[in-house]
Length: 325
Image 1 (cartoon, rainbow, N blue to C red):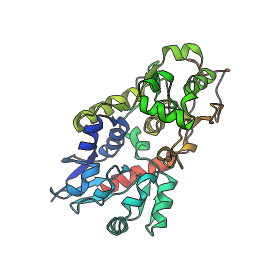
Image 2: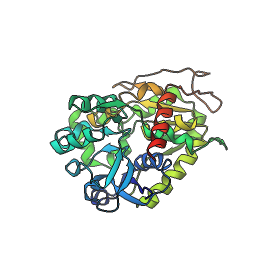
Image 3: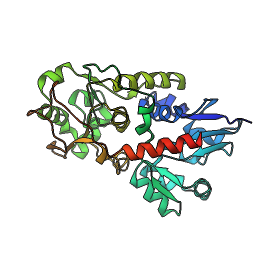
Image 4: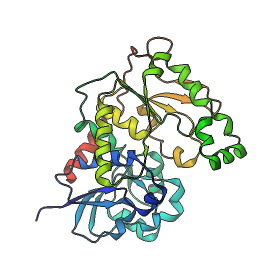
């Protein structure tokens, strides 16, 4: 009997109630989907334990998870664990005896960051650094109709402007207490230092955070997003699931490493930063670059060449996923 296949989705009451999702989650699932001969069912990441349908094979690249009490998954799921991240915020909840036994059953576990790899190893689980599945998206998305579009996507998204803070009074109050309220000019300071006025005027500023949508809509939006990124002139971002796909597709990309002040963000990046052309920003918004470009500032005519350190990891992920499917 032929195998059936599934992909992870982000449909859950927890997302309905907060009424937003990160489109990067569907970018990750799109990366897994491209290797499957069919998609016979969708399974929500945070409710994998409740799946009771036919046995399915599933590539399990994801951030684990908003409801850690719902791990491990159903026995009806045959998983390939690559490119997983276990966030530091749920470590004390996810590692039950049942979860550890589950990971050991399907080891070795591929991890998208060093933090997760080392964490699993500390629990006696065979784990290795795999990189992120989004590094394989060049298999499907080709740079074949390059435009003059420059995208700034969630640059320094946690260093909010004054107008952004005013719309979120609770967050503004917290930042007054912790001393971060006066970071509202940090993003502007960094952008004006490194990019010329013409480029900033003509660029498109977007966010990965979107209103809650169905899985079908999520995959459609992710597809459109990736097609636009594939043919962009330049992408500047502080989102790894914008930056990594750009590397995969050959789109010039700059990762702005700044404004991350909490452990949810920081533990996700170890092992990925070296892949990127970066603008590194300190707590005072002083910044430096780790790459070269022509001119004093980056403009529409600047030539930006991506690094190639990710290539071997992408090739290994492609081979592993093809063998699994």
